[in-house]
Image 1 (cartoon, rainbow, N blue to C red):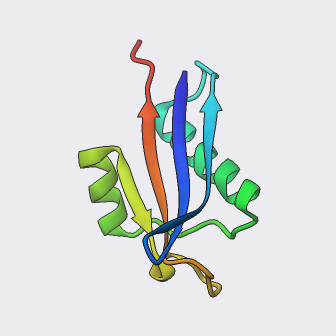
Image 2: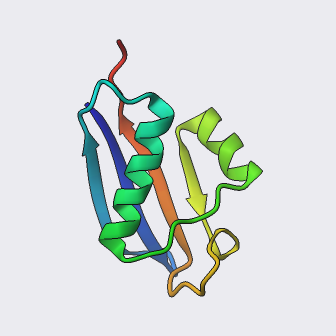
Length: 91
């Protein structure tokens, strides 16, 4: 099971959160990450954020990253989207 926790944060308060579970062993880890991000954005009705180099480096080191207004093309009504892997299946 691959699970990701997505949270919308504004002024250090949690606005919305969701946990996305992906149970498809045919997908690579990278495809699971992108699918989870797509599912979170669909659930929160957001455009898909752009992965910047800082996001990639944070995610590689910590399995977690934060998408701010710099990552979105349109204006956002929150401070950041927190994206964190909370469970990974190792085969």
